[in-house]
Length: 535
Image 1 (cartoon, helix red, strand yellow):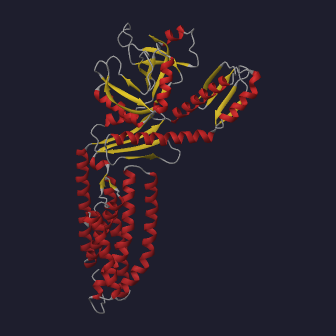
Image 2 (tube, one colour):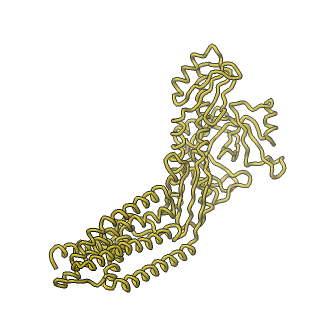
Image 3 (tube, one colour):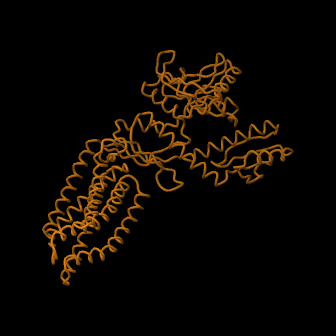
């Protein structure tokens, strides 16, 4: 064996040892650094969800915040106006503004509303200012709401103690969809509820109520609810109302304290011993809460969760940094109290979400998939080995060894990169076997042609590998480009297939060109002046 062949053998053995070590976790001293092959959802069971963030909610919230900011600014400058209202998700108007204050209004808009365009100063009512959110800023708010929703969902799931969760954007840039994959999940319905809950906590002063219907509430205020107030339903029922009915309260539109002021939340009990959720506020929230309760003793304070009043207790004294959320007359279920405290701690979603796709795979189905996939892979491998040995004789042994090396490198690389093996990934493994054998067939047939042309075995092998190399590079490069696009733009099953195929194609170039050629040269080196080869 000459030095060049010996060096090639050393390289092959080194690659094999490294690949086996990555897959099997050897040596033990680097156990913490290794990553075993993980199973995808379709093999170990779990839930696959595609969520859509309703970004229009975030835009509406920004518009409402802008309205309240303008209201306070106009009142601070003693600017009289008739009404401030949202006309579209991204548009609001100030109607009936004092014409003598036009300069002050424009100054306020220019200084404090740089993200908004003044699109009109005309309307059905004179002196109407129409503001619209700038398109670039609107898009930024939409993307920000998706990012915030991802972080909130991740925080909520992390508190459940579920491992190896995949949470990522679904689709291209600017999309409003989120992919969530949770393996080995026992209670998908509970997790879906936790993820979907907006968990927007607000404490609002009650203006009037309760009322049996929205019409009764409006009638008590002269037929129209003022712009600074809003009507909200309550989970508590008036004791004088019939069963199944809903009561309503008129509350201040602007919250005295919101979820942004929340410091913590935890399950507790109300005065009747029923499950409830206690919360405490940060320093800023405690200061605001204390100021509001101190100046409104005797009034009711509505505890609002996701737009529904949980309770409306009467303020008996100054309260600073804590409160309690009850579940109405029936109270919370113990699990519901735990889940509510969890979502409150993780923060409110910036917008509501809805489910576009859901796939649940049970562990039994996953085990069946593994069994079926392994059987398919073993049958494919055995069939290929039998064919290659029958058709190419000793060279079939060469192809089989190269194929085994290919699989060793493939699984070692998957373990190193932490790639998940899915059912389509098993199909990718089978395809990798086929691609590897196809590469060897191209080489072997070329060697046969060179031998028929009268060349010696050594010359035929060298010439064949040299001429087939470019063809192999072209075919593998084309397949790599396709697989890369599948990985970048695919999800779930498609991405699992693409990962396996990419790694398999790269390893196949090494085994088909380097390993296979070295095996031929080893065999020929054993025979002086070899004229032919078993092929």
